[in-house]
Length: 64
Image (cartoon, rainbow, N blue to C red; front, side, top):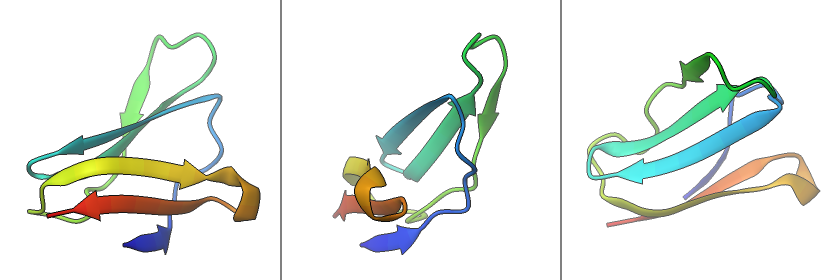
């Protein structure tokens, strides 16, 4: 799966794959407050979730 995400360019982004889908947590450089994105690949087991920043931020996920 690949898609353009709707996440702005935060200072810190944590991409998380779970049994319920994939999520992006974003924060500024202080990391005091985090924002949670919408769920990607809802209901799928996401084993690998990465962003390729070389080509505009395409997100790739390995989903079962």
